[in-house]
Image (cartoon, rainbow, N blue to C red):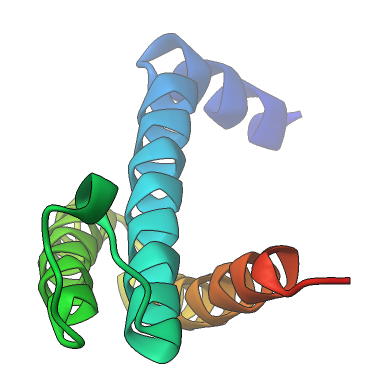
Length: 114
């Protein structure tokens, strides 16, 4: 019963909104990373043909990596206030790496012709 009381307290304090906002930000950054890696891999023109460079994907990759690092730092900063912060931080970083790679793979598979 104590677990449910702690869960109710956390939900009342807005933990659900914070988690979903964090996840939304991460997924947007991961899709930006997937777009950049796809551009870098296939050398197609992005930005409606305004940028014609084989390195144009590197800019998108760089921006998305900075945004992912900022979101990760924010998550770690919030987790560091909890009791089991080391385990949760390692779990969060592992989840970030796994999901980022998986989103990139999914985006590459959607882009390949059948």
